[in-house]
Picture (cartoon, rainbow, N blue to C red):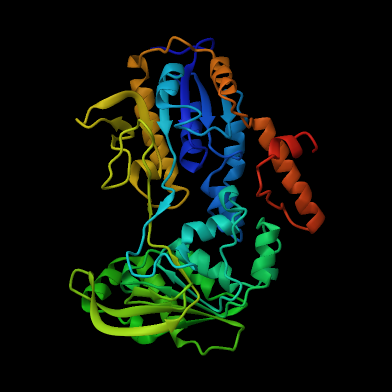
Length: 456
């Protein structure tokens, strides 16, 4: 199949997060192919985890939105927001209207701890907590911070765990200049949290946080960082691992600096605990205590319990132990790895054969690994595969973009267009100007298109 200006390659990209938009950008830059791309997104707003997952005090990371804005503004791209893939548009629909489809829906579900008491009120995933303080519309009517919480446990030692702990440790005044929603800011301002714990089941050599995020904890104005020197002592295998990797050595050096500090009496305390595993969450009607077990490492870096336990008063437990993808209706899915089976982004069926015209990118392709920028190389790989296949892809008969619009209209779907997002964006910025902030996020999208769009 060849593409021309009058008959470009028709591509649907499901998901308007970093993976999907990096992929769209790669397709637009292809020299030998002309493309027309529809970006299909469940929410009214684009940018996915950059908008709803990156911590509000990490504005530099959010700056990639400038690039994504240019991508979506391209005349060859259409943004179709408020469209739920699987119901509003099915696999059969997209295969009937597009020459190729790319699934880039991320990994929205969290992994569980699998311990007693995990379902008590006050025990929730860091995914939910991040969505709350990021203003995700699915969580706009839920408060994920207990008003009486004085001690909060964050289980996991990746960047998400560090982000959550840092937000809890900061004074609300430190977040006032960010895009954090006002109701969330009000709740954080009233927070009674005084102790935040980060628990890692293995040692500092196996922790997944990056040096920048770890170093930020030591710069908190409102919280002392407390590290037990014994819990960051390295066994021989861990010491060899650290010596071989500069990033790990930097992390260990920072942790040793933390351990050598004398608490200065700041209002909050952030405890970094290693070689500890939660084994039970205790409470009657809500979280009251967390039981942890001290661990040891074997020569391969695997943790096992020592039989020594601690009981800590705790009112909230936030699990940050990883993400997993979810199956899309009609799309192959590996229930063990929680990804779409693929080869270089080409979706594979149960027999390992490529399904023509179907591709995947991002966490749903490779699993939840890397940072925002990691998705660029991943998306480029998928884009190359798609463009290599383009000459052999069968052409869909109905090539009119308006056909998709008519289909959605017939199903009662009120599509959020790019111009709608621009109006939302301007509205949020206007709200921000009134508060001396960059923007104030809108969190309730129930009647957004009727009540906000058109009034800016």
